[in-house]
Image 1 (cartoon, rainbow, N blue to C red):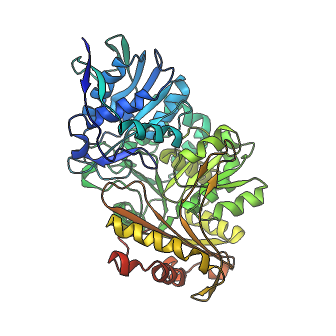
Image 2: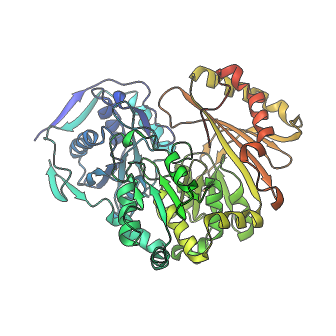
Image 3: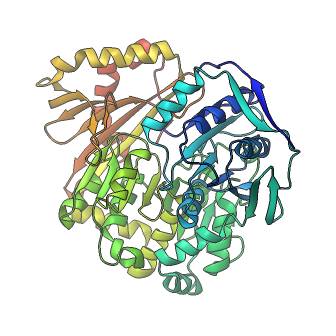
Length: 543
């Protein structure tokens, strides 16, 4: 085996987004494309010689090939050991868990999360630092800068190694340890939740359907829910990870997980439904004919946190992304703990978690998590719900309606306009920003604008600043309309419009969400001139 240095030149567009670099598989398959990015990443790591790196991904198309390249490059850069999930598999939360449990220097996660897979689908790569969380902006900005200047990369010429058999093998002077991808994570979940109570729940006839969407969450859910907790075989469906996710769009929302929604609306529906996404960091919760909004899920788990052993002493605080509804704010106020509003991207929660300022975190995009790892965690959220259901004896719908009665309901929805022309999207956002000084005080669809701004964030731990994180229109009655461009797509631009209205009156908490938000939907369309600028009269996806 020999370490070889190859000449190269930069590729355009290798700037990591909110969670790493995501592109079409065909882009990553270009010669030197992955190598350039990994070299740029390794160039910025200090003190990595002889250290341990965690590696794994969601099993999508190109995962296995990328693993072999990264192993050979890690060996060429002097890493002492790589902990590799068997078959190249590690869910995103499990990767965070392994980094933390094994004291690793950091980790590389191969995933495009909830984006489609397959030869014509998407691929992604991101770096997680030693706390188990996504690299902060100062690191990702450094990676991007180096991708624009790169002239060479280093790699071992070793042959591909066996990544399917547990145990150790070597590349150059580096040990590759193929590990059980579930073991460390399962042990952590047993520390978080009352597994005895959940076992009794299933033993008493409680029925559940967990749709893993042919993605990486399947092996974890099957091992824990069916194996450890005793749910009947077949509780976890679509459980075998497939390179193309069985042709599904592995985003657990009512649109893409329509099969689960249909099962939960049937006359013989199980008591509880759940789904996770491509890399198992997102979750959807469904009761009998009763989908639960992610923002409500975060708020409800916070309100019931003490039923779970890990949170029995209470929580230090809550963090939510700015577009996520303010339902969690009301729970935090009732508990007497802070609620932090951050930009979108799980990396913004890391400092708050490390500093002990918050315990639970959540994003409206079906992501929930806590201080047990430094990523959102789909299966963790499902197990948390099972713990709450076991402790209260209530159904999903009863729990949510009781929560609304106590705290009020935040009607909430997200309208996505996917794959729009990038120039048109930029024009729309520029037009909104130009209107901000004049919007305050205006009455729009019967509501007076209290404040209009472009959200900025100053990290309360390290003082770092993030600007232009989303245009907000805030009304006197607490309603909100938020606009931002997503950083997770791979083609064109995705405009996300977030709509929220608070309702304290129990008698008015049963309206259809889109009907309740109709005036705000009209505000969004008119103020942003969505149809005029983008040519889209209706959103691509409504959740």
